Image 1 (tube, rainbow, N blue to C red):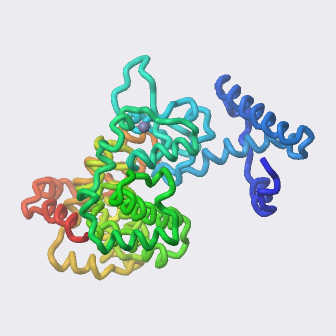
Image 2 (tube, helix red, strand yellow):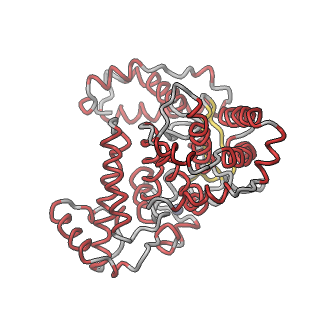
Image 3 (cartoon, protein in one colour):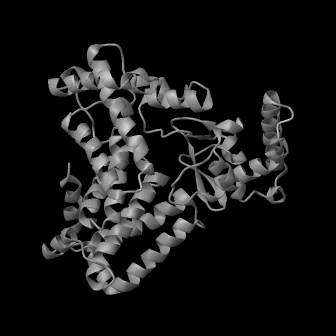
Length: 402
Ligand SMILES: [Zn+2]
């Protein structure tokens, strides 16, 4: 806690945060964790300076961190800030976890991803476990100081998330020379997180991969949607045109999710829907094999909500209809079929992913009931039979865009 490295503005912000009240920690082990955190923070600070002026404020800071790591989270998973909670800290990491941590403010829950027998250890993933092997290993070593030896890491680079679309030697000369140009100015191949091997082809590809992650990481902070979309499109072009990234390889898959959400903010609804359909049909089932995986459920929820919005937009005077959606209507697309089928399945999956009493479950069930009331019982039978094959039409959306 070197006070020189914290700006006055950051300090003021920290002081304004509400602190966690230790009296709300009901379980003795939670209170013990809280006190141990204070003790170790005090010990660290004392090693720098036993008379440090901030010493007496440590309990308050620890309380603030505890409190704020809980309240900053939404049930739809963004943003993820886990590390300070005693419950989350008590579970070990695996890149193939059998549980996930979810926040339903102010409560934190752990939900299982696979059957867990009595006495079996519960694992969560501290990093994005869809990232390639070397990236996961590097992040875990950097942030948590350990080398992961989980079942997925034992596969090393043979794991699915490391697969390229083609052998690296087949990288087109144009991209290989671009990589070499980049390497003379940026040092993308130096970090262990982008390591692929020592051959020329592996080094070239690690530079391209490094440039993609390097461009991607700051975009989340980008407030300007146009700039963000431009940057995300540049990454997608590299992944697509180099012909090396399968659509499921990161960060290509995450970039697609982000670009769809940015496009929605700009009312480019149809384009966002086509991207979300690709994620729904072709990417998520591979990245998150369980139907009820929380990430998959959240993506499906966003897709269903967007379809409802598109479907109701012509009758809603407060909305401008996206020309792409207009075209879908003109071609006779019936939104109500995918809306109903997605919500029906989601109503079941969300209970498994987020729990029966979570806020997301409530939202899904509420929307499902509203849609059902709007459709009416008689029409519902017809919609489920789907005689015009609208679900098949909907599946085709997954192939509209690159
Ligand atoms: Zn691992």
